[in-house]
Length: 314
Image (cartoon, rainbow, N blue to C red; front, side, top):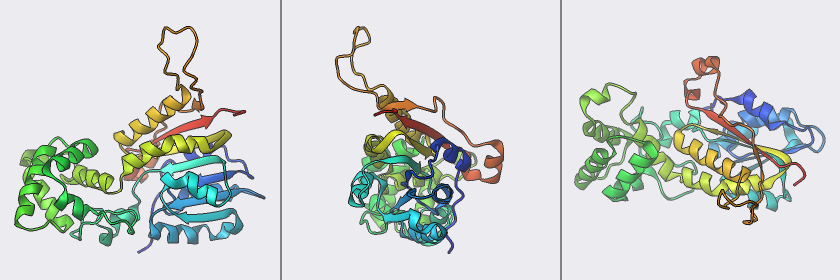
C-alpha cells in the first residue's frame, strides 16, 4: 500500500517558515514527506533538512520522495520529543525552523492492518511506532472503567464517555475486545439511537481518544514545546499544525508562555522574576485552510496553523 498523505496548509506553512537556502530545518512529523520536500526544494549549499518520524512506513515513503535532494537530507526514526538529543548526536545544536504536522496520515487511517480506523474490522492496534508495547488492545482490555471514562471524556470530548466506558467494561468480562469491529459495536450500543444518526460515525471520538492515549500524543506535545523553541536560532520559526482543540490549546498556551513568561503580579512596577521572553507569537489567531483546500481535502477542515518566532539577537 502506497503511503498517501495530503499535506494540509502546505503553502501557508512554507511561507511562514521564511526558509533560508543555507539554513537547517527539521520536520518532526515527517509523514509522507510533503512539507519536507517543499523545504528541501528550497535548500542550497550547506542547507539541510532533518526529517524525524517514529513510523517505519513513513520513513520508507519519505525516503523515496526525498531521494532527489540527496546530500541535503538526513532521516531519523524517532519521536520528535527526542529532537534535542537526536540533533545533538548528529552535531546540530540549533536550527532555523521546525515543522510539526500533528495529523494522522491517510495511510495510517486507511491501512487496515494498523487498526486506526473504525471503517474496517481489524485487530486493535493504533501504535504510531510499532516497536512500542502498549497498543489499543491493552488500553481497552486492561485499563479500569474509570480510566477509560477519563480518556474518552478528555481526549475524545465525547458526551457519552461514561456510558461507553461502562459498556466496554461489561463486554470484556465475557471475552477480550480484540478488534475494531467489536469496539464499534460496543460503542454503538452505548449511544442513544437518535444521537447515532447525527454528527458522523458514533465511534469517531472514542477512537481518537484511544489513539491519543496509546501514543501519548498530548503528553509528548506538552512536554516538548519549550525544548523545540529553545532549539531555534535567532529569528528561527516553529510552525505547528493541529487537528483538534486539545492540541491547539496546548500549542497556543506554550507559545503565549514563551512570548510572555513573566510570573510577577500585574501591579509590580518592574519584573523581578527573571523570566525572559523567547520570542513572539506570529499568529495571534490561527491560520485556517482556504475554502478550496477544505473542499479538496475533507481532513483539512479542523486544521489550524500557529507560528512562533525566536527573538532576533538571542
